[in-house]
Length: 318
Image (cartoon, rainbow, N blue to C red; front, side):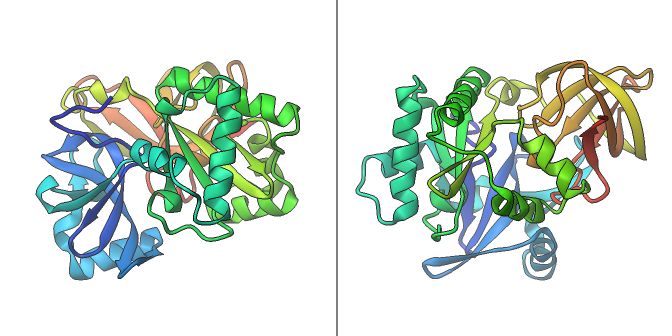
């Protein structure tokens, strides 16, 4: 599943000797480094989650060697050379360890219960992983369970299992309180009512006995792409309305939607908030950053140019 020469995939965590824990965000090496973003700072056995603003400030002040500007994406994020990595936290390894151990708390118990239900619906746990706070052993009683599916086929099998689980009342959709909490965490640009309408039809999250779980895809086809084939530069922000002509990659990371537009052929989504947001044939309103491929002048619209994606969104025109 992983390439020996570059065994890093999105949803992994990598840790440095300074106690910095980064979430991997890139399938390919960036100038020989691992493209990532600082998410946690370790203090002994405990980890503190940091915001995008805190992460950037900390690195600028104390660890500028991990700041990075990608020429390929014309974007700023973080990058760590493999030599600086002291621990590589792999979701698929973490899940198997938890499934074959006695649970230490209620969240680990629910994780085992969740995987057992999914496997009854023919989901193979060998194509799954666990990420987020549970992978790092930092979960609390209010933590979510973040499941990773490796490959598009595995993800859609997993999503169908969630649909069936909701139908059979093994899982439930998010209630108003959980939806409100999810809305506030995302800090998106939509109203709560718009956000909830889109979320309730995605079936990439549900609730097991009061605990929310999310499912996300790591697209195994994507990491074979040579990052040197395309180079982009940014051309400012735009808001447009268009019709979705292809939603086959709507749940990928990054997600992609082909649209009906003479200048911009594609919307590319780098934030989980707008993954699975639109469906084939729907009219959508999109606000994002225009990127044009330098060699061809083909343009695309980026949603999620920063983690918070301020001012950027996708919504269905209803």
